[in-house]
Image (cartoon, rainbow, N blue to C red; front, top):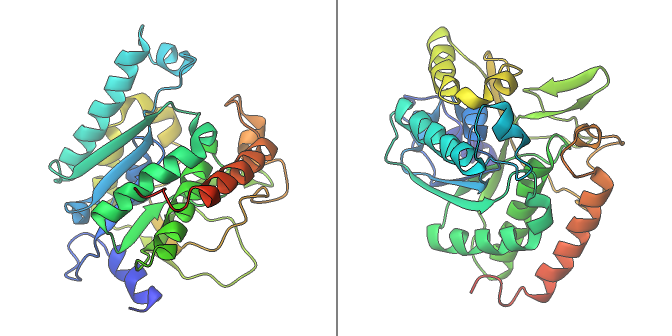
Length: 280
């Protein structure tokens, strides 16, 4: 199947009669799927939703800022918000899994995440995998991108037909501050689609986003007029995604782009050494 056709089918608007490819959605946090696909979530009833992190940083700052005395209560609230969002989209019975890596720490578990995703990929056998672009917006996002790309590469090396990796637009550093809802520009030509949202689609997406009450300040940074997707390029995770500083170089999230690149190099070596056992 042509990549452009697969991209179009996988990202078609809700209600479109085109057959939906079997989809695995791998995102860092509960609410990322709403940012990425909120206007068309209803098409993903048969998809598998995988969150890499639990959405609750272990330092407890986020949980305290949102009025939770215990970290576990905040973690549970984020799970409930996600379930509420799926129900709001009419797909409350969709399959879901969480790898339970602590929020902001996915970069410290790159090889582990890739190997766990490899097992999921072999069991689920998707045609497409939705995930984050490698753009330096959030270290957990970049960790997801790394793990998905490594997982798909291992899958192909083992003789399987690899799924297409599709990306949704999130955020990255711009010359005048944070840019949301667009992709970091790349030198090569990209297969990309952009869907202007109708009034009904905007309301549908707003209703899904509103389910994430704890994340409203962050979600308010994202516009509701367009959803963008592209076929993922080949990334070099050994280097920052653009000229430093990337966005999280300036954030108190415990990770820098230089350190991430080091961890990606180390994880790739581990995965190469364990490629024979990674999917067993």
